[in-house]
Image 1 (cartoon, one colour):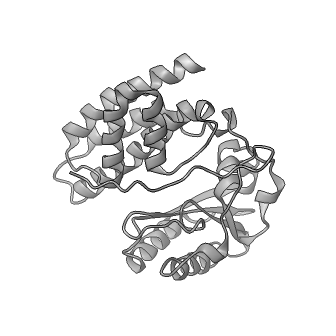
Image 2 (spheres, one colour):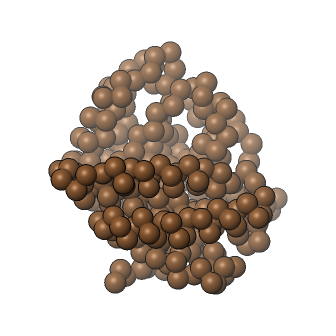
Image 3 (cartoon, helix red, strand yellow):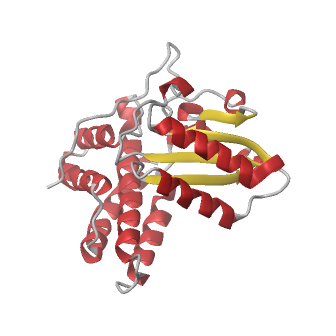
Length: 266
């Protein structure tokens, strides 16, 4: 049985009800700070003059990172010439070897023009992003309140479920990375289930969080009949399963329920 720590918070809101971005460079503690510096130097080397800006988001710039559990989530914004995907992939692998305490390294790459029309990513960066280098676009976007603007995972859940289930069915047990890819897929989709579950209730809660435990608690408060299933999603997000059949069955049960509830609300 997975031990679950009751940690995480909802976002603080200002007097007008806007979510407060509490990320800062000062909150990045050891050993994460050296990893972030390596990320910056690596991106500058890979992209050169086409690097417009680099952002960090998630638990690390908020000072909430937990060794062995937290990811490094970054967004690289380019202009003029897109970076070589192989070079970015190599950098991610290099950083992962440097930082075994980090659960995963993600360098999401997006062009400047594409970011200007990507409202979901703008929203994420507005509420939790930190500009590490370049022009800080976060200051140019409007403040965010609890409401439809924060429906980040729910609109894409059906697509995400289908993609993961297809990948799991196609994955060959003889593949040398079978168990690694199983765990990665399990962790990725169960985190989306948790956050989609909270998006269903955030307006009733009049609060917002992306932290996994508070997502579970908020959802369970309004959907007690599915509290057990969502707790299982929480366990799988923390300690991913390597058992394909069991994971597929779980997704086929909780996934359609969340989709049905989302359709009934919107």
